[in-house]
Length: 441
Image (cartoon, rainbow, N blue to C red; front, side, top):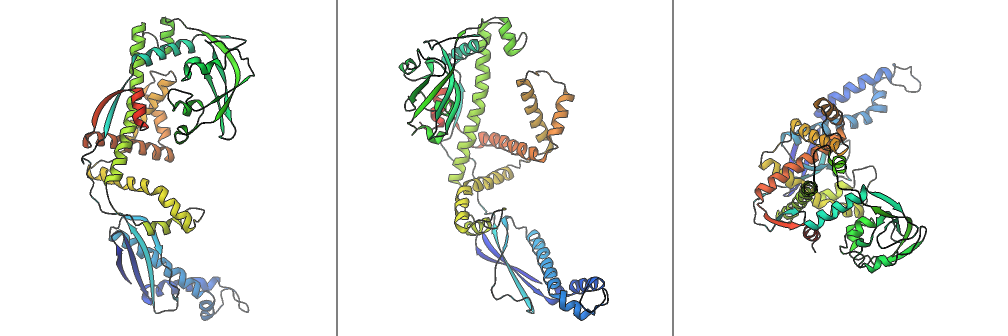
């Protein structure tokens, strides 16, 4: 057998395989002999069919099967021996003039190659690493929310200026149907809440989403609409009142502190505020890290130039999956997934250049940390190592979980690498300033 590579361009090639009779005749003969005791031809007893009749009835199919086995194995070994780094899988090229009876059978497979490119993680950039602080206004607001949450709800007949009103926002056309609790300080214009004052359970109040809140992104939480919708959303929404309460605020005492954080962790209002600030800024740091990872990702995708075997991948996309795609559908899918593929290649190159490998110990350590954090959220602040490791073992026995957690470990390692190499500019901001920066406003 003769096998060679023919370059189409830098990232697309054709593997040409020429198969001759000697490559498959021995295996075909063996299969014919194995078939003879089992062959059934009308007019002959089973096992007594002459060999030439067995070959006539079964030979063509056996020949094609064995040739395909030879080709598949040779293709696999050739890809390995040439150390070809493929995108997708080889695609057989259709030859309208192909004949199984030819002396030399030529098979061609188109392949897409991972491009070779330079990755400069230290390239000059304008990336910002945000350090987000919890300001006094946010902390005071959180203290009040805690007092309301653990206070006593006093049902009311009608809505008053100091009421908390529970109900559901709806708009059938936009698919909005979300239950929430509102108060006077929720709205940008305090006069908006006056529309609710005097209303009873079962009443419906209609407001317009445009300029409803100080921060337009609150629509995402209160109405459960996407970020893409919030800026242009200007529709009437109905709020059906389901409960009306005023809150008798909980006393800020040791009993409440212990209920919130465990016995003895917090013992004064000052310590409560410090704990709120610490917990909030821990969450903010995680959000800031995600933004940094996203910003570096976007920068590397835009600044790292390389060609992809686009036409090959579009053809390949038509052949994979349960539902075969049309050329038009494959075009749409390629456009949708191209950026993700580019970063996948950049990610692999970054890990390889920095000799970063994901070990089972990395995965185990990461999972252990996650399990302890989750248990703490449910009040199990001091689980034994045996309890934690038992849960970790069960989690890591699930291959889907292993894949998901491995992706998170890779993201964590990449984040640390990007912090070091990309050398972003550090900027201290409030949470409101961070939100504005995150959404480009």
